[in-house]
Amino acid sequence: MEDKLEAFQDFYPDDYSHCYGCGRLNEHGMQIKSYWDGEESVCRIHPRDYYTGGMKHIVYGGLIASLIDCHAAGTAAAAKIKELGQEMTRETMPRFVTANLNVNFKAPTPIGAEIELRGKVLEIKGRKVTIGVDLIAEGVVCAEGQALMIQVKETL
Ligand SMILES: CCCCCCCCCCCCCCCC(=O)SCCNC(=O)CCNC(=O)[C@H](O)C(C)(C)COP(=O)(O)OP(=O)(O)OC[C@H]1O[C@@H](n2cnc3c(N)ncnc32)[C@H](O)[C@@H]1OP(=O)(O)O
Image (cartoon, rainbow, N blue to C red; front, side, top):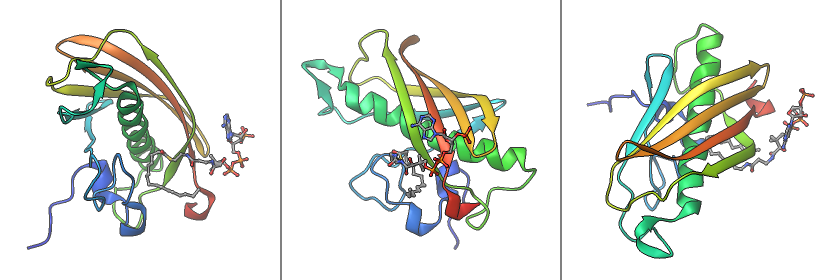
C-alpha cells in the first residue's frame, strides 16, 4: 500500500529529503512533521533526552534553532504553494532554503516535554518568504524565531 502523504515534508522529493532536521530519508535525523492548523503551521516533537544544553534538564539551543529552521522551511514551501493555488505533491512542492535565521531564547526548554512549534507566514514576496515561529513547551514560549526562506531557483 502507498504511504499516506500529509505532512509538508512528505511532499519533498527524495533528492531533497536528506536534511538532518526534516528529511524523511535521513535515518539519523529528527524527521520533523509539519501541518497546517488553520492559518498557522504546527509541529510537535519529543526531542531525545541526550539533546542536553549544559544542564541535564535543558534542551540544547542549537537543536531549538534547528527545529525552528526546519519548521519554517516547510511552512514557507506550504505557504508558497497555497499562494499559487496549487496542491502539495512531490512534483509541485517548491524547495526553500534558509537565508537568514534569528532566534530569541526566552526561557529554558525542559527536556522530556513535548515541544510545539507554531509557525506564522509573515510575508511572501516572490521567492522570499518570511516565517515567524514560536517554540512552546509546557505552555511557555521558550523561543521565538524568524526565518527568511528563499525558493531555490532551479525549482521555479
Ligand atoms: C542551494 C541548493 C540546496 C537545495 C536544497 C533544497 C532543500 C529543500 C528541502 C528542504 C530542506 C530544508 C532545510 C532546512 C533549512 C536549511 O537548513 S537550508 C541550509 C542552510 N541554508 C543554506 O545553505 C543556504 C545557502 N545560501 C544560498 O544557497 C543562497 O545564498 C540563497 C539563500 C539560495 C540565495 O541565493 P540566490 O537564490 O542566488 O538569491 P539572490 O537571487 O541573490 O537573492 C534573492 C533575494 O533574496 C535576498 N537575500 C538573499 N540572501 C539573503 C540573506 N542572507 N539575507 C537577506 N536577504 C537575502 C536578496 O537580497 C534578494 O532579494 P530581492 O532583491 O529579490 O528583494
